[in-house]
Length: 141
Image 1: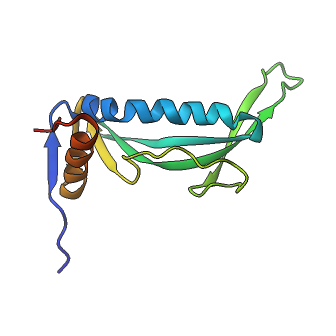
Image 2 (image 1 turned 90 degrees about the horizontal axis):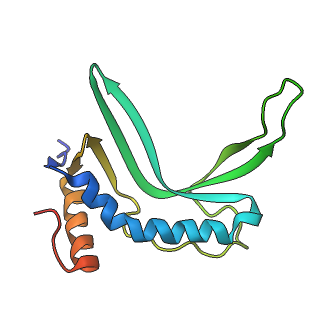
């Protein structure tokens, strides 16, 4: 029998997680500015939305999601030019690119419902350790 981890609800946890993530998000945005001419873009998180009846749930996956960005020119039908994002994987696509900044939340996944989050026990423990390391306090008590 496989033991499944228990789910932990953290009331108001979404804002707390995003507060922890904020300085790393800024570093990743700076990194993307640095590599802009390469045509690649690093997204630090992936969002998936699901609807269960009248409930809307957001799944947030922290990681490294690489995209190639192409500019699609305006066409004869009057549509404006736009950017096309092509997912290229989770590994750095070009070894010539500088290494991206570290993200302590990489590999974690949370389920968001309103401002509350649901995480497994391992993710909860990781969030507590990250909070203690970065801020010197447990935001998730």
